[in-house]
Each structure stands twice: as structure tokens, then as C-alpha cells.
Amino acid sequence: MPSSDGFTAAERQQIDRAMRDAETVCRFEFSVFVGPTEGPSREYAERLHAALVAPDRSILLLIDPAARVLEIVTGSVARLELEDKEVRLTVVEMQSQLAHDDLVGAITRGIDRLAQQARKPRSLHTSHNQT
Image (tube, rainbow, N blue to C red):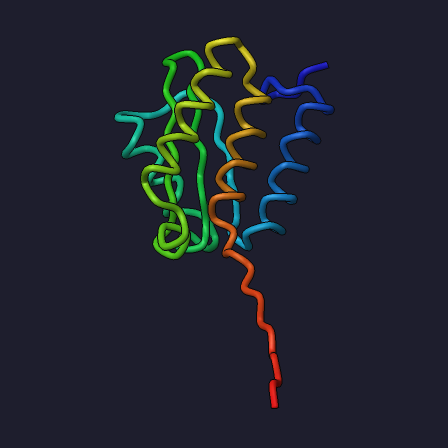
């Protein structure tokens, strides 16, 4: 049975797991808002983002399915790791899934893609002693 936000318990669990996994991968905090926006969607998304506990290290996905609106807001620290091009590609991929009425898939795939893009590359430190 869907909860008050329209998601079933299994869908909610799937989104929560995607957020936890993403936070482990890139160390940024993820938040998702699904619902109607108040006023211009970008401004509303930015206000929601600013109200987060650690907005500098946070990434917010806002989706208003009825208005067909999708916004992604990145904090100042997260923005250092995520280029605008990467965010735009994520938006395009999410919009494709939303066009097929796959809200949960769009959210989880978007979160995963952003986390993978924001992950700092692993550096290999090798020491070769040649004498």
C-alpha cells in the first residue's frame, strides 16, 4: 500500500538504499523531494537545499511529476566534484525514465549516476625502490 508520499514501503526502501549507497560512494549527502513546487521550481529547489543540515556537502533532487519538473541542486563542495555537464546528462537520463512513468527508477538511477560522477578517483601510490 502506498504511503502518504505515494511510494510503497518497498519503493521507499529502494530509494533509501540508493541514497545510503551513494553517500558511501562519494561522501556527499543526498536528499529527494517529490511533490508540488511552490513558485518557480529552481528557486524552490534552492530553498529546500539551503535548509538541509549540510547544504555545502549535499545534493538535492526535486521532482514534481504533475508539472513534469526536475531540478538538481548541488552544494558548493559537491559542485567541485560534479561538473554541470555531468549533472545535465543525469537530468536527461532521469527525464527518459520519467517519460516512461518510472519515478523510482529515475530517482535511484539519478542518485547512483551522480554519486559515481562525484566519487573522487582513487589514486594509486606505488613505491619502487630501484637501487
